[in-house]
Image 1 (spheres, helix red, strand yellow):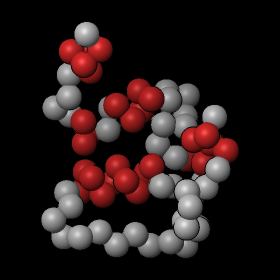
Image 2 (image 1 turned 180 degrees about the horizontal axis):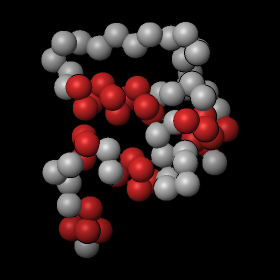
Image 3 (image 1 turned 120 degrees about the horizontal axis):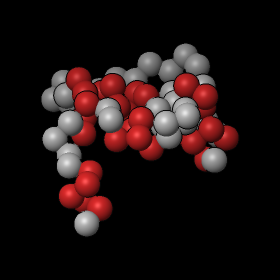
Image 4 (image 1 turned 90 degrees about the horizontal axis):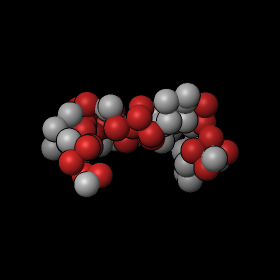
Length: 69
């Protein structure tokens, strides 16, 4: 519910995020999608929920089934 009911603090429609150069492109993309102003477009807020987050490329080397054990 909280993913779709609020805006990230300090983020507006026009906010431009500036990342340090050492942050990977995947990390930048992941953070940007989590901080999406429009809650219905935010990563994880769609019909696939947490699966959308888990399938992001930043987690490509995570074995989710092993973590559940």
